[in-house]
Length: 337
Image (cartoon, rainbow, N blue to C red; front, side):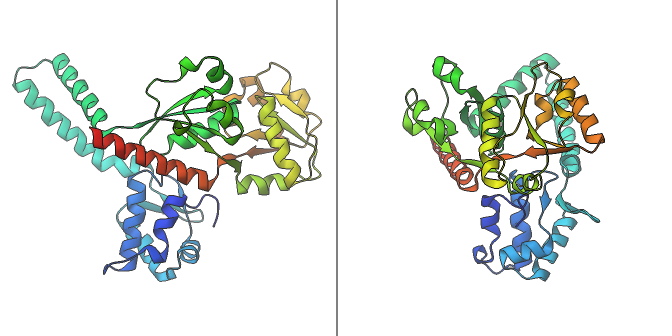
């Protein structure tokens, strides 16, 4: 299946052997996909597999999958874009009807409170208190993420933040080791890589630490492989992340040496790019670049230069284990409320 396909959690639920009951299979498939959308496991605008891809993966008949997609389109859960594929409906499209109903309900509530003689400021205070109370009842898991470089820290934090029920704190490893007090006292779980696990468990109880493995996405591997023989450089904030890229490329394409440009250093990126045909950059690289560096990259691309993003991800097994750990912590918190 393509890498953008489905998370392990969603994929497992859609296998043919996971279905039971008397309802038609297409109905069960549509219900499960819709449930994944509603709980955030399939985010708005994410691309879904084609009918054939999902049929091959799940073991369900082509007609069953097509019927399920037609049903989801009727429910306005997904949208089919000619020539591009099938996507989860965008959040604004998905929520417009609910938003209108919510606004109407809020107007009615405000009207009733005003009739009881409360001022708008008093109503605001009441609402704030009630919202805080609901948040405490629902509960969430406070997860700290620690790593030695900002690029990997961003990658892990972004993926952890997508796990429902989490609140994320980011800490560079040196900051954590030198100033452990920066870790939130209410932290439920700390996520780091195997490389730093021993260091972290010197200051944090081992039962509170979860180590994850990371690897480049399959798409990155394929894109980088095409650069074999091409004059290529690497752009990173930290030398440590460029080392990660070099190690991965040594095994994938045979690259052993890549010239590096330090993003945000104030040096002339255009001069660095002048002798190159391609560059490898971190995922979400624009967030690390200065305005001048972005201009240099745009010019480089317009002249035919290749910009390849190195997408580094928590592997599927680690991500599934993280999700399970968060679910157990949430369940424990809710039992104590």
